[in-house]
Image (cartoon, rainbow, N blue to C red; front, side):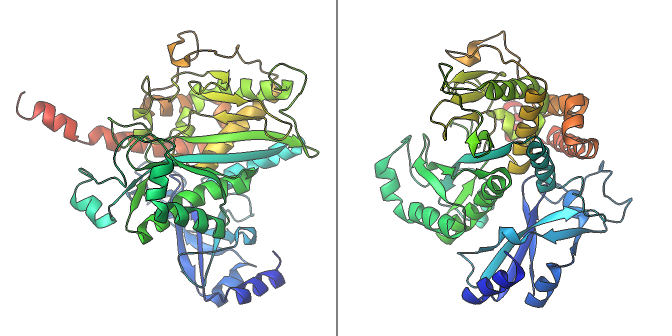
Length: 449
């Protein structure tokens, strides 16, 4: 939108307040309200925003190892540029407009720690090669009849799910919880995060939402905003949601799969009608790059300690760098279809991803595969987890972080500054976990040892 169109939209929606924000390393939306006069000025000149958002973790604890910011820099303001193309009206906050921001340095280039800026730089690289990346995300999430207060009072134990039992693709459960389903579908449509599908998954109170695909940056915006918006939608109904990869060891994990294809001149370059499975040579090279780099980039796809609790046999999560035609046991599922629908589904990722970082890593690895003309191994036709001849994936955040730190390709493709900062944040996350005394340890050792 240009300025005139934006003012007309504000008048149409009777906007009285503006909310702006940007996503941090952990995929948390950090923002604030702006007065209207302040907002109009900020469209022309970036505003200041404390860079502590890149100097603390998801719990607002300050890193002790960050170099981009910290006590040694005094946590100064960085420049935050409002992106007018992200204009939305908040369905749950009347007369309130919302915008996403890009964090930049003085010359206007992306701040080294800005996830959205990282993805924009990889997209620019793709477009320079003549490819328009098209992405889409789908998330599984658990819903509970709880509030933030009850979660903490119960110490996150003994929570009441939205509905009991294991009932995937249930017409009945969706109908019984029509208040939630209609709120999700209607509010996300109004929020410009339209869904292609919504259904129950296997597990008590678990749903899966497939977000309509789009150009890669808008797809990442929609994915990130969906997770943020679901917390608002659920709270209005007296519920709460979690996008943890594995919130309960007795239940399935929550996936966060990424669908992707490349287009040129209005045509899907992953599609070729000649081969048996209609996957082009470009698609195979893109796939080959992702598989070759999957182990060393796992820390970007699986960013939390909890991510790796999902990597166990028998729960649909991949254990190795594998791919197959319509094979859901693989890390990447090739989906042959029409000239429009042929795509790759990246299945290593869970619902706890930062969409900007995960999509940037996937796209960068795929483009590298095309440049290097990488050839993937033959597709897996049975249970991929049973294959011992494929590259294994890291099984802990510590292993993944160490592998990422040593990865020359990660530094080359995503930049030294970003990778170094990201590695420091994951090292911090590992050290916080290593110091924790868990409930499992207390039950196992407190009395017996």
